[in-house]
Image (cartoon, rainbow over all chains, first blue to last red; front, side, top):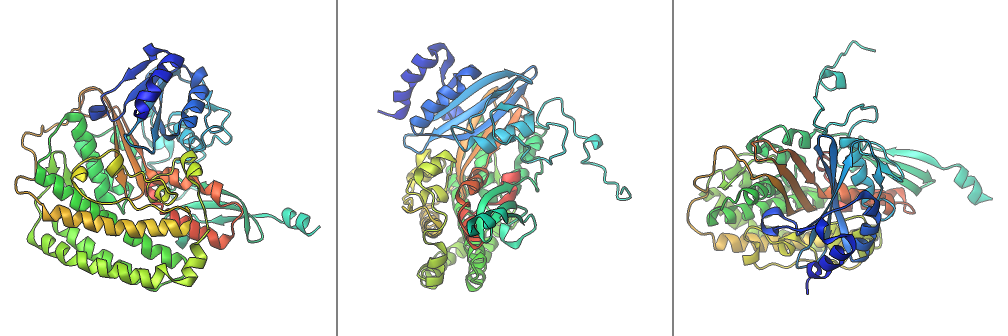
Length: 160
Length: 370
């Protein structure tokens, strides 16, 4: 029996069958989507870590009022398994950090913070990672417009 | 007493951002007690070029040249991955010949990436000769790929539905001559380096990573396979023509610098096998699908694609609203995760080992920074 067949009933039972959607792997590249409330995130991730999954990446999609956080979990295994965990957050509300459970989450969360301004409660070192420390914007938010006010376009060599 | 004084004397050392052994603009902030490392903080982002932002503000085709500029050593692999991801989302069928050509080119690119790593790594460790040999071999590949792609590093050869143009005779002759040449060279490398006592002392038992630790830090690619996990996306989630080809996934057990070296050297031999098989069976036919729409507009939804780049799991994730420009374009680059493990494995080692460990992880900084 594949890992997917093993884990599906477990996830459905613990996190609600209505939150679990099977996806067409041949087209979308992952097997399952789990819509989750942020309060249950650490519980889920503890379970996945125990089951031998690794955190592939964390990213987000700006949907206007809501920021959709997406966590991808895979396994070093055959047949392949990939789970997308989707946590929809109103902007400005922190989600629990996973860095204490899975080390790979440390940099992934920093990147999401850097690009989207999403805060992660309990992260040991939530600093910008790719942009400079003094940046005052989050460039992957849809209302971000690149321009000279961000210091990127105009170089004034005469300035001290 | 002595111990206490030494601890109080701990100091910070900035390795990089401009340092020849950091392979690009990488900054390691090391807290040292004499020569011993107490803490390491990798600082990245110096070559951030906003590729994801550009991806979300361009059409799918316009973004294609960006792909090879993320990982400049595996540019063709990134081209290939991006085209496969978009084709899968749009349901574009690629002609058989184009699939073979892409695989041949991607594997040659993988070899050239590993060769550069091999040369540069040995130079990091103080051996200059292998660098010259490796660059000689690599130059052959760049010339062969240049024949059809027209570029040396930042390729834009793949297209949605195929490749830009068909292989020419120079490419075929060049590759045919190159395969036995590199096989002979790999033998030379084995006698020159693999059994070299200085090299063994510098790499054996240094920077050891267990399989469990590797999973916690989401390591992939040769770094993971050196820990004994036979996870290769060409086999785990096969794409293109890989299911039809015979090749092995080299793994090692100790997970130290030597094993990471060994796995990459063995991978080059397997890539040669793939190139040889694929060229031997190269089918006739068109190299580009007919009827690929001018504007690529994947149906609304989100799409993930996984690809085995020379450095590990390359993940492309994009969200389409059915329009010409993606709503979100995310790239999970392998070096980003691979590098972060440094803060775990460097403490306790010596500064000299830092170079050996950092080099053995094979990071490409622009791929981390995007």
